[in-house]
Amino acid sequence: MKVAIAQLDPTVGDFPGNVGKAEGILKEARRKGVKLVVFPELYLLGYPPRDLLLRPDFLREAEKAFTRFRRVSRGISVVVGHILLGEEVEANRADPSAQAFGTGRALYNTAFLLDDGEIVGYQAKGRLPSFDVFEEERYFTPAREVRLLDWRGLRLGISVCEDFWYREGVIAEQIGAGADLLVNVSASPYFRGKPTIRWGLGRDWVRRGRVPLIYANLVGGQDEIIFDGNSFVLRPDGAFLLRAPAFVEGLFVCDLAGEPVKEPAEAGIEDIHAALVLGIRDYFRKNGLKGAVIGISGGIDSAVVSSLAVEALGRERVRLVFLPGPYTSELSQEGASAVARALGITLDVVPIGGIVSELAELLSHHIDTVGVVAENIQARVRGLILMAFANATGYAVLCPGNKAEIAMGYNTLYGDTVGALAPIGDLLKEEVYELARYINRRAGKEIIPAFVQERPPSAELRPDQTDEQDIPPYRILDPLLRELLVHNVPLGKLEADFGAEVVREVSRRLRRSEYKRKQLPPVLKVSPKAFGIGRRYPLTNLFEG
Image (cartoon, rainbow, N blue to C red; front, side, top):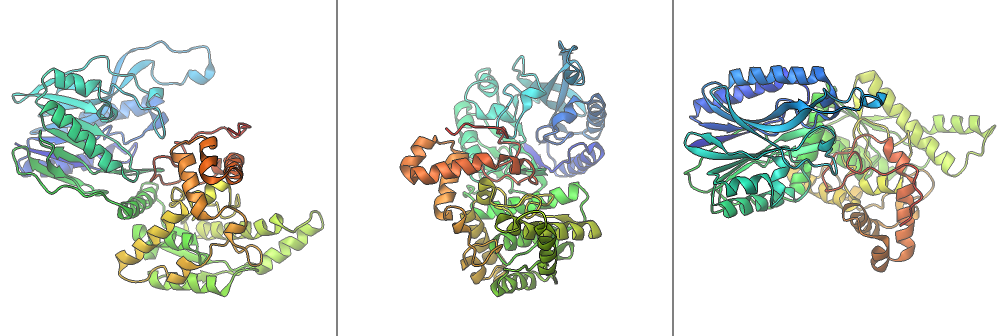
């Protein structure tokens, strides 16, 4: 029997577009003789819809879209993630902040089985994730019962995303009840190494139940989240019948009685590159942004962001601006020019020395304009000019900050932090270098020159400045931040490994720069813990722990 996964990239709230894309996929599936097509979690709405789920008009349009989807799914069987409005629930009618909270009815995150456009049955999501970027308990009610659905002589165990990750619950009960085929619809965000985790979990399920599994994951960028696809079908023995490509839309078909395909290999930096390119492309496409403006400094961060932007948008939609100041070196100009040439872009050069001098003179009548004041004037003038370019062209500025700088607050608010998106804001410095090397290998030529990669990082806001004068060396800072941010290791244990002084200083700077991160552009998430919606610390916080 032929089955297929519709690994698609919906846009949140674009009901006509999402239904239209599904219609084309279903036509293709019929032509190929597919019996069952599986779509991802909440496909018609897009994921995550967040507080749109609290708007009755949004839910009404979602139901209209589901009706249209059922119509275009005639002549074939489909599993699709959607919402289900349930029973009335008690609401807080006294607090004005709660009065607009939803419809007064329970809402379920649900997978529906359709046959010839008719609803055969459904299964609601049992586990509602409320960690990291997820906040489903804010919107949904967990499943009240677990079902098996009869379809063409098979008993289907259908589940939604998070239920796949727990040994007990919906899928375990379906296996215990005698499921013949497991189907999971997911919107599982990407981070490095996560596809391998999913494959391992899938194999656990099929070997436990001795049944095949169809796992359909979303693909595409949604704000700071990137979905990688990497959907798959497994035989009962754990062999792959299908492994859909990463970061690619399409209909992917296999026969449940077919021969196994090649085992997937663990991906490395190439997946990070593909994820960031897709994240940039979808952010610009879905928000109707014309192109990108990047302040290219001659350093590695802005060089990497420039390369990613050209890959995502095309060189004709990328504007590179070099903004030399009082302390900009000739090597920086050479680096910026070399990257622009390699990318095929004419470099705009806008010297800022005169403006900086005039501002310093103006302010000197009122305040002392030395030290950090003088440094940040330069950064903010650059930010102002980049925003002027954006206003004049209808483009959006890309922020080149990396995760280590952002963690330390080693940036200038309203200066180098301006922008609509921070593509490498979840990459530690060592990962930026790794990505630069991959960009060159992939291109088969030097996009980012060796001297740009080898020179000491510097903001060049004062004479002979280097990053390591202001923050710990990246060889220490990167692994320390990984332990602190991703693994949540207590400071006492870190002090034994890294030394008390550096750990306390990094922790202090991390805590004191929270207000800066609150005002940063969204950061594309490619690690288990990125700055942004998945890490919520108070701005006012004296805990030094």
